[in-house]
Length: 291
Ligand SMILES: Cc1cc2nc3c(=O)[nH]c(=O)nc-3n(C[C@H](O)[C@H](O)[C@H](O)COP(=O)(O)OP(=O)(O)OC[C@H]3O[C@@H](n4cnc5c(N)ncnc54)[C@H](O)[C@@H]3O)c2cc1C
Image (cartoon, rainbow, N blue to C red; front, side, top):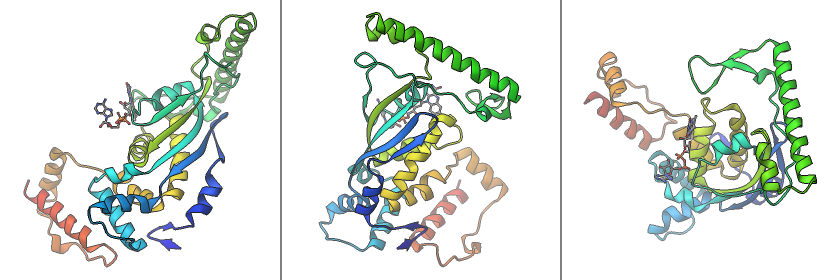
């Protein structure tokens, strides 16, 4: 069934397709969906608890989810959870772990031996430092000979570090000490469980172009999975959070000064635009005009 720009498919079919499937990310990484608790209707079920009413139509569920998302009524989205098995380079794991609202259980380099998988960027990812964003790479790729040389150097030092590590382990040095010189490009793994509200927050931050490419590709893979399991919620997230912007008071003032007194009546009527959202738009315009 096609609906509001997304497809509603049989949930058990989707889960059967997705759970356990490994989606490859970067050179040796992956995202694997382990478990899901709840679906779009569970979000509505918990939101409606106050009314004690029974099952509603899909359209009513969709309208409710969109309302909740639009007005940041976030707690119903916390009622559903997803669990992933993720393999990722340690430098990305360090960024990822800053999202404190998840439950994590990580591979132990004290308990088990580290593998010799290391992340190596593709040649077109070897770029110059951005002059605009102090944290980021620019669009400018390095000369391919230089980039290839950098990749080769990185690979050699990864191999040397691993050889050193392996020789320590083989000679009986404790794994927790032997590993300390391994590079940040080493791969680690974890189980990561998070509710949908906090997952959307993670996606908002990590799908953004300001996020590092190597974490963004994981966020894109997760978004693609979530879109299928929670089609209504993901669609609402895309409409009201991911693809929306907020304006500061100063920015609104500036807009108001330059495009003074927008007349609500001059906005062409769009039959597809929900009546309630038209009313909300009217209130926003009133707010700007009164600044
Ligand atoms: C592009 C980008 C660049 C970044 N650069 C840096 C950097 O240079 N250095 C750096 O250290 N970090 C950096 N970060 C990490 C960033 O500061 C956040 O730590 C990270 O994005 C997690 O966000 P969060 O705290 O909102 O998420 P979560 O930890 O998932 O928390 C979600 C929300 O819960 C609430 N919350 C959670 N825990 C607490 C708490 N203990 N107290 C109060 N409220 C809480 C907050 O409202 C928070 O927004 C960067 C992030 C991004 C996206």
